[in-house]
Amino acid sequence: MLFKQNPLFRKIIIPWYDSEMVCFIIIVFTSLVLFFGVVGILATYEKVEYREHTWLPVILVIMSGLVMVSTAIRLIKRYLQRFPKQDNPYP
Image 1 (cartoon, helix red, strand yellow):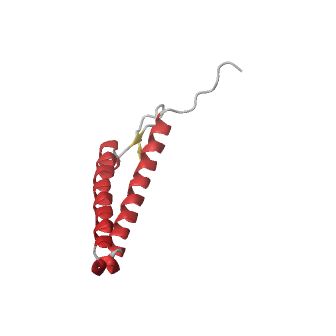
Image 2 (cartoon, one colour):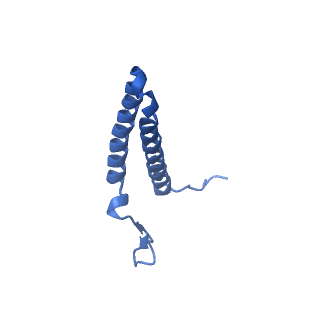
Image 3 (tube, helix red, strand yellow):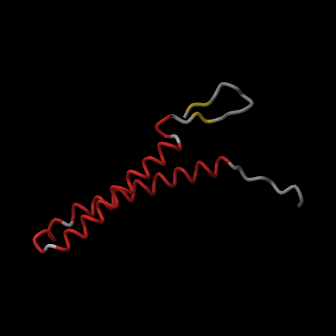
């Protein structure tokens, strides 16, 4: 990521596709895909003929879950960097 040119305050410039709003939108859409995958798993278990196709909704659930977790970790790291550790003034 790029730094601003001011040498006193080096604030990281976050690109638009890595902003908090985009991360929240990604989490919402991947949760919809996760829900769709769970419904697909339930639908394949209802019909005996479809049970051999259970792998597809399982892959959807796994992949959307991984994207949600990685995006949540990115947001948590960003929030933790925003509030740096403060030294205790009273030893």
